[in-house]
Amino acid sequence: MATQAIPTAQSGARARPQVNPWLIAISVMLATFMEVLDTSIAAVALPYIAGSLSASNDEATWVLTSYLVANAIFLPASSWFSRKFGRKRYLITCIVIFTASSFMCGAATTLAIILLARAVQGAGGGALQPLSQSILLETFPPEKRGIAMAVFALGVVVAPVLGPTLGGWLTDTYSWRWAFYINIPVGVFAIFMITRYVEDPPYIKHAKAGKLDTIGLGLLAIWLACLQIILDKGQEDDWFGATWIRYATVILIVSFVAFIIREVRHNSPLVDLRVFRYRNFTLGCILIAMFGAVIYGLVTLLPLFYQELLGYTALAAGWAVSPRGIGAILAMPVIGLLTSKMDNRWLIFFGFALFAGASLWFGEATLSISQWSFLWAIIISGFGSGCIFVPLSTTAMGGIPNEQIGNASGLYNLLRNIGGSIGIAVVNTIVIRRQQLHRTELSHHLSNTNPNMQNRLMAVESYLHSRGASPADAVHQAQALLERSLNGQAALWSYVDDFRGLALVCLICIPLVFALKKTVGRGGVSAGH
Image (tube, rainbow, N blue to C red; front, side):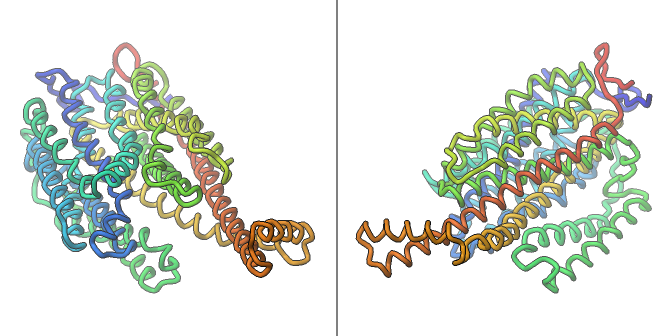
C-alpha cells in the first residue's frame, strides 16, 4: 500500500528549540486566536457600526469584506515575506500592524476610515494563521505534531464560537468599539512572548527570497477581490441576473487562469503550486475547503436562526451557540494524542459523521424550541470540528518538507477561508430563496375552499372578538396572525433545508477521506503504511 511519511531531518533541517515548545505554542497561538476571534466579533457588531457611522447595513458589510479580501491576499504571500524578512520579524510586524489597525478601527469616526483600517488589519492578519501553523509544526517533533495541531485548532475552531458571545457582550455592555480595542492587550502580550521565545530555523535564516512576484500578487488580488465581492453581493443583486456580476465573473475567471499560468511558469513564483503534487495535501485542501464551507455556514446559520425566528438578542444567541466551544475543547487533547497512535482517516471520518449527525439534528428545529434544546447537538458539532481539523491538518502536511511547510500552510488556510466565504454565501442564499418557495407551497393549503383553514380562522376571529376587538378588527388581526405564522413556517423550513444540506456535504466528504494515504504514528515517528 502507498505510504505517506512525515518528513524527518533529511527532508529539511529542523532546529531543536532552545525553550519549552509549549511556550512557543502559547506565543504563536495568541496571535492566531486574536485574528480569528476578531472576524466573528466584528460580524456581531455590524448593525451597531452602521448606526454609529450613519451607514446602511449593506454598507456596513464592507467592514467584513475589506478585511477578508486583504486577509486572503496575504495568506499565500506569507511564505515569500517570511523568507525575505525572516519569519519571526515578519510575524511580529504583522501583529504590530494588526494591533495598531485594531485601535484605528475602534477610533474610526466615518465609514471610509474604518474600511481603510479594516483593509490594513486584514493585510496584517493574513499571515498570522499560516505562520503560526508552520512554527508549531516545526517546533514539535513529528510524533507530537498531532498535539501541536490540537493547540492550533483551539484558536481556529474555538475562536469563531466565542466571538459572537464575547462580541455581543462587549457591544451590549460597552460599545462596538471595544470589539476592536480588545485586540490591543492581546497583541502587546503576543509581541512580548514571540520576541522572547520564538526563533527562526536555520533554513529561514539562510533563505533567499528572490524578487517579489508583483504580477502574481496583483492577479491574486484581482481574482480574490472579485470572488469576495460576488459572494457578498450576489444574493442581493440576483446573482447572474445582474450585469455587473457577469462582468466580475469574467474578470475572476481570466485573472485566476492567468494567475495559475504565471505561478506555474515563473522561476520565483509568489506561490509554489508544485506542492499540490503531494496527494494528501491536494485532497486535504479539498476537504478543508468543504469543511470550511460547512462550519462557517453553521456558525452563520445558528445565530441567525435564534435571532430572526425566535427573537433572541445578539448576546442570548451567542450564549445559545457557545457550547460548541466546549465540544471543541473536549476534543483537542483526545484527538491530539490519537493522531499519533491510529489511522488518521478514521478520526476524520468520525468527525464528518458527527458533524453530519449534528446538522441533521438541527434539521429537526421548530419554532417552539428553547434556548438549550440543541445543547447536545451543538456540543457534538464542536467535538466533530476538532476530530476533523487536527488529523486533517497533520495528514495534509505530513509528506511536505519543512522548507515547503510555510508555502503549503498559506495555501491550506487560504482554501479554508475561501470555502468559508462560499459556504456563508450559499447558506444565506438558500435561506432567502427556499423561504420564498416554501411560502408559495404552504399558501396552497390556505385557500378559502379549505374547510380546516376556515374553521381555524373563524375560531381565532371569535377569540379576538371575545377579547374586545370589533368584528372588522378581529378579521384583520386573525389574517395578520395567519400571515405571520405562514412566514415563520416558511422561514423555518428554509433553515431546515440548509441544515440538511450541510449534513449532505459532510457525507459527500467521507469517500474523499479514504482516498487519502494512510497515516499513523508508530514507534514515536508518524509514518504511513
